[in-house]
Structure formats: C-alpha cells, structure tokens
Length: 401
Ligand code: PMP
Image (cartoon, rainbow, N blue to C red; front, side):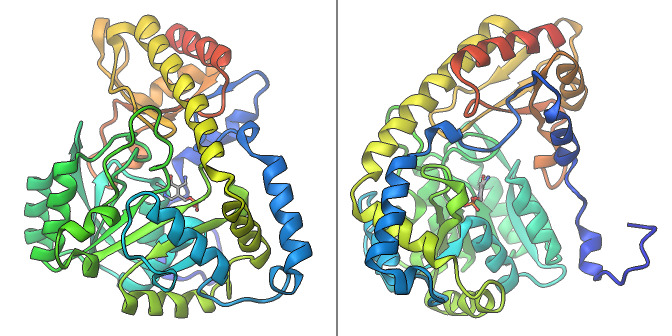
C-alpha cells in the first residue's frame, strides 16, 4: 500500500489482496450465474434443526451457552466431535485431544502462528486453498509447491521436496480439495504418513469436505489411517469443520494435534478470541447430540451430487474438447483445464472476463498456486446454483468461449 502513512507491520508486505476478490466485486451484476463462490448453498441449511438446537442450548444450559468458556472448547461439543470422528473410523481421539476452533480457518491460523517463522519452508499442494497460502505467507512462510495428479499429491516428488527443503510442515487437503476437488489415493495416504514418520515432519490434514461424498465414501482420512502407521499420530495435525455440511456461519471447526502443539495453539487462541462462541458451540453440540447429522449429510450429498453430475454432463456436451476435467466424487468443485482446442483461449483469467460479459462467473485457477501457476485452469463451483441454472450457466460459458 504505497500511499499509506500508517505504520503497518512488515509482515503485510508478504500478502497481496486476493485477485479473486476483484472478481467477486463483479458478482453483484444483475442476472449473473455464479460458479465462483466456495460457499455451501444456504437453501441446504437445516434451519429448523439448528433453531431447535439453539433453543435447547438456551433453555437447558444458558449459563454455559451465554457465558465465557474454556479456550479449548465447550466440553459437550468436544465429546460430540470425538464421537463424530469415531463414526468415520478415527480411533482413539479422546475429547481432550481436540480443540474447538472458530472455523477451520482459525486452526490454519493457529498452525501458522505456532509453527512458522519468517522464511520457514512449508510444502503445500499446487494448487491449494487460497486462504491458506495467504495465511501462511502472513507469518512469513516460504511456500514450496508439490505437484498433484489424478491421485492427489505426487508422493515421490513430495519425498524429494522434503529432503531438499526440510519443511516445518506439509499442508494437504487429501479429500475433495479446494480447488482441485481431487482425492488422494489410499496407497498415497499411507505413504504420506510413512514420510511424516521417516522424516519426522508434521503433516497438516485439512478436511472440511470429507463428508461431502456423492456415492462411495472416500478413503479414510489420514487421521483415521494413522493407527495403521506406527508413530504417525505424533506427526499429524487434522483440521475439521462443520461449515460445509451444517453451516459456515456457526464458525465451528476443530483441530486434533500432538499434545504439545495443541497446548501452544490454545495459548495463542486465548490471546486471539479467548474461545469460539459458546452459543455456537452449545448449539452445535445439541445438534450433534440430537442425532440430526446423518439425515443432513444424506440430503446435502444427494443435492450436491446431482448438481455435480449436471455440471459435468453440461460441460462435456457444451464445451466438448475445449475443456478437460476429472468428474469430482465429492466436495463443491470442478477443477478444469482449458485445452486450447480449435484455437480457443487457454487462459483462465481471459476466459473469466469473457464469461462475466456473458453473465456467468467462475474463478480462474492461477491464484491457487503458490508458484508456477497453470494459467489454463479454472475452478467451477456447482454448489449454489440449482440444476437449471447450472445448465444455463454452462451454456453461457460455451457462448463466451
Ligand atoms: N480449508 C479449506 C480447504 C476450505 O476450503 C475452507 C473454506 N472455504 C476452510 C478451510 C475454512 O473453512 P471454515 O473456516 O469455514 O471451517
């Protein structure tokens, strides 16, 4: 910010305001169909169930739900979250081994705060979650990009990068990543855990999308698999979130980490927000305890699965060989590449501008890379438009191209 006379900290020099933010300003234009956001569909929110849970929290436990609480998190919610993970094959995570965070975004911030010094090497996937890139850079991280393919991060390459850079940690989104929508294969998940032990390197598993699968369940999380790889739990951090499946506005996430790291994260959180909203935590705890989650998950999986299929079918029929993508098996995103076939543009940012002109928005892929961006990539979210709007929007993409 060259014109400012205000005494900003140098750490801000490492972070640019997001290129995507500029694009989001255009989304207010009337009639735009947006495939740009990373939001779940607000029509999916179980308003009745959440209202009942909030009401129960206020009538049964007002002294907790409206009072200051423990930084680690509200005890009944920690118990519910441990049980929620246990249903997904996570063995031996006791409530004391997780802390509640204000969204998983805060867990990422706490990881940055506790582990990153200026110049610290951190390996992330190329591409990865944009807010992670920015958050870690704010702490001065020197990010190293590990390539991915259809089976997720390339583990042989990852091992080479670990040897070369001796990173503070590795950050992965193994399940339906943002933006890649991809899945790390079971075999590679085990290799990642073995690498963590072999090189005594922390692995951060960010897992806000793991419950959003459409047909078959994905391979177990790294956390669930960790009991198969002796010693790996000592090197594993797992971040979970209720945002994508229940409501991002609740701001309820959690983090499982080795005890020492968790203790330091709690110390940092104390000076940041003291604790996650007790009202939100008590509401989430009541919601989980009431047994509403399985039905909610079944509903969102069905709706997003149908939307994903509609988008992929429409992309194939309308854009043909001008675009290349893997059909996602879960999550919120189609990650696609412009092929340049028949002389059409191969540049995602150019195409995004052309698309806005035609009344449809998506996010070009380049900002999701910390280095060597693939300029031909795009992220299309199928979460918020219904199936008719998705078909209409893809038709507009075809016109724009
Ligand atoms: N990680 C990833 C990969 C995400 O896509 C998001 C949300 N877009 C988050 C973390 C943060 O989610 P929240 O803070 O709402 O839990």
